[in-house]
Image 1 (cartoon, rainbow, N blue to C red):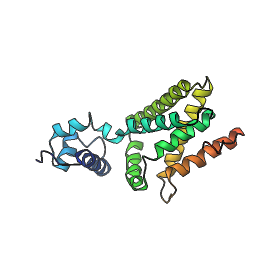
Image 2: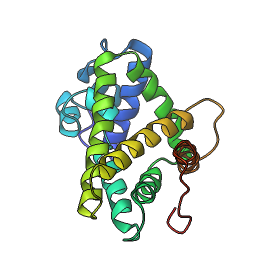
Image 3: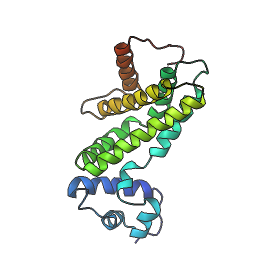
Image 4: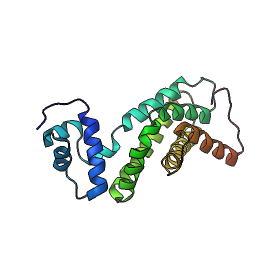
Length: 195
């Protein structure tokens, strides 16, 4: 077994997704994933607490990027424009070369109710964090909750479009389009100085 090699975490993620796709999530063990990469099962558990978390790794990076984007928005920006700034910052974590991996990941998650529940929990966590950041900026309730929940929904809808076959627009472009659709539903327009 290889004791250490650069990129072990990424290789474990790639192997896990391949095995989940070929064999199924339930039929794949952490030991299978480790063996596919040529490392010990202990090495797998040094990187991930369980096989489920291979699919959800990066959540904290996304939340941190979104919050940083929220904090960097102009102080006088409306709540939805602040959320747009946060989503734009988060979109930078999704380059086009990640799209194929994200499609496969979504397909694996869609087949398992427990994974779907984890995905929903992840999105709820993003909304809670955005709400707290908005409140910290001085946004009152219920505007903070409405903007944060809307932002989470915009991210989810845009992400679903981003991974669709044949889609070539960036996640940031799709988020802007979805947010524009939301604004048209509510009869509001963005402050183009902040979005």
